[in-house]
Image 1: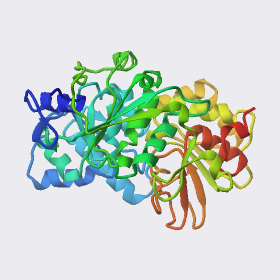
Image 2: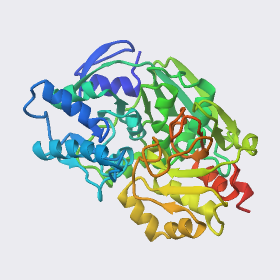
Image 3: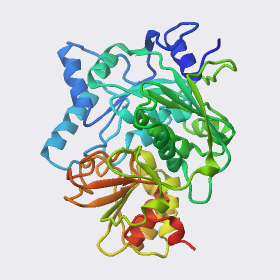
Image 4: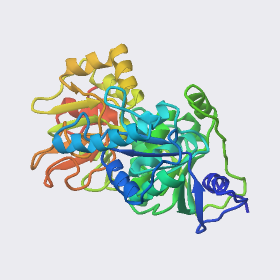
Length: 421
């Protein structure tokens, strides 16, 4: 019996010819990362262990993105811990405000995550990098500290669920709608400690940006990782950015999957995930009676240029509804600049939206978009747990950039067709 792509990557990184689901392995790592929330905890454990050096200063990435630009003294102190450590050990990949971005958009953009890599990050959405054919997963800060010292991490080989994608998206249906649809089908624990592999003929029609969105939310189904085998789109993307060599892995023809599910893209409508779980999905047409107070467009899920273009297409020539706050934030400085050059920022500001510097702030209720008691938001982010974006009695509805933009204009959850004729 052959191996899946995840099994092949992990086998190569622990110098074994073959691994199977359930095997315990210690794997070499190509990159480890942390942010201003999780790095200080890892640094504390690193120092507690008495370590005097990191395993490789070129393979550690620290990105202060959650509470930056610093929202208060506490967040400033957190970032100072990260900055001082990066300076002390001369980390190659420390990105300060002004050049930083949301980590899961910035690292692919910088060519730091590549096909065939084994990557861990002290952030659950590290699974994003599977879109480029890497095995990437989130870990706790203690595991990250050990990895900073040794360059290794232990794993239990996960079984793989294969999602065979067929057909084509309808107008206004996006990769975000696909992953919300799938989570709605299998539930938030449907892929618990399993790899979610997305394949089939339709996957090749999905852009790299869309694939990053899909793999980003594998964790919302409980997945250990999300992954897509590299194709010509992947190679074109990474060749323009790569900072080192890489190896492309693909599953064997006779690889064993725990389950194979066939998904017809033509069956999917624009989705909305109701509070307080990403699995509470409905077609947008079923949500038209939900009035809103805020719209957030951006994040590591949907803050890329493709997402901003889609939102701008819906908002162009329209105005944000009275008493609705619309916040748009690009995922990186490069995307910010591109949005300016393409005139997207003009569209958002003329419509009455706020255009923000890159930050994770609104997504986790950190800053720049906190909800008050009883308020509702439509967000292109990845989670809508109780209190995720502010008050415990507020509500977050997850959607695509197109649905979010349309909702900002009408003041209620809306299909883009309602505002774009």
